[in-house]
Image (cartoon, rainbow, N blue to C red; front, side):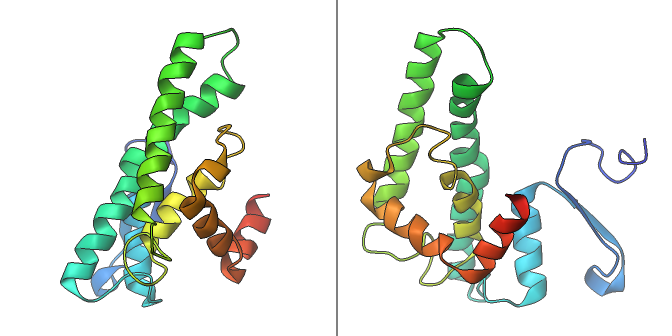
Length: 167
């Protein structure tokens, strides 16, 4: 009940910022908007000030949260949590996962980052999923642009510190 008071969905993540806009408390749910909010608030450079670039970052950050991640979730569940053969379901969701990786691979053709020419919340939104490619049984070598991007993001000191926390 205590958690329900701050998050009607009772799901993680929830952010409670006691120093929100105008100095007033703010509660946010959903990781995509939390990423954008924190990037804006911190002025870290992970969220651009140019409106056209903001839209580019927003669309790819939401792709990571609403399309890429949820499209990969069933693969992990079928591979690791649901007993039995499930061959038809595995084939369906494996094909979906491969298409998602292909889309990202095409997007990263000739690019260092997903949305614009710097590291943004769009990269964060995708990295957490791509970083589990082995659990998803994805052959990352089939997606050279994703492999290159993943290695570059994983080498960032702040990303390494974050990964050390979650194990």
